[in-house]
Image (cartoon, rainbow, N blue to C red; front, side, top):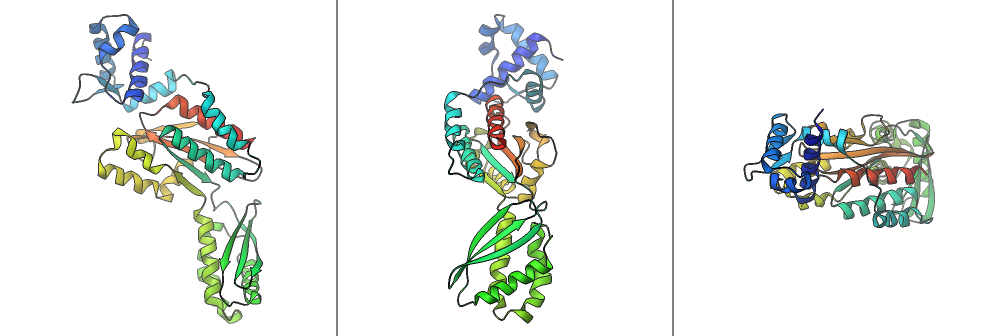
Length: 328
C-alpha cells in the first residue's frame, strides 16, 4: 500500500489528468498539499519508480500509468451522487410509459454518450441462449405480411416482409416447415439450419419458394444481429489520446466486431466491472466499464467505453442508475 501522502498525490494526478488531459506538474500540487515543490517531486519520482506514474517526453509533469489507474479505482475512487441534471434527463426517459424497455435503454445510452463524449454499448441476451419456440405470420395486405418470432424465454420480435404476388398459403406452408423442423434451435443457428435443412426441401412443397426462403432468411439474420448496439462511436475522435488515424481505424474495427464486443459480457459478475487498458479486448489505451442487468423477460449487458482518462466516478454512478431503473 502507498503512504497517505503518496495516495493523495496519485489521486490528485489521476483526477487532474482526467480533467485536463495534460501531464501534471509538481507546482500544481504544492498549494493543495502545503509542502515544497522538492518534496512533491520526490514523491512523484517514487511513484514513477513504483510504476504508478509515467513521465512524458514533452513535459516534466507526470501522467497515471495503467497500474496507477488500477490503484486509483481499487483504493482511492470516491463515488459521487449523480448530479441533478444527469438524473433528471434519464428519469424523463424511464418514466415515459409509452416507451418499451428496449427503447428506454437505447435512448438512455444515446443520452449518456452525448453527455460524456464516450461510446456506449448494449448487448442483449445472447441469441444463442434464446431457442426458437415458434413463428407466425399475419397478413397485412396482398403483398405484405408480419412475421412474428417467439423464443422459449418469451422474447417476441416482429418484422414486416414484402412478398410480391406470393400466395398466403405458400407462406403458411413455409412457416409450418420451419415450426416442424427447427423449433428448439438457438436463434443464432436458425439461419444455418434454414440454409442446410429447409432450403433443400422447401422446393418440393412450396412453389414460390425462392422469394419466401430469402425473406425468412433475412428476418432471422436481422434478429440475430440486432441485439448489439453501439452508440457514439465517433466520440472517440474527440479524445486527444486517439488522434492517430491508424489507431482510430483499429478501434472502429473492434467496435464493429460482434465477437470482440461479446467478450465484454464474458464473466458472470453482476456488479459494476472496470477493465483498464490491457484488461479489456478493445484497446490497451481504453477503459471499459460495464454491468449486467436482468428482468423477468430479458437480460443483457450495458457498457461505457472511453479513454483510460475516464471520469470513473461519474460513469459508475450513471451505470448504477441505469441498472437500477432497468431492473425496476
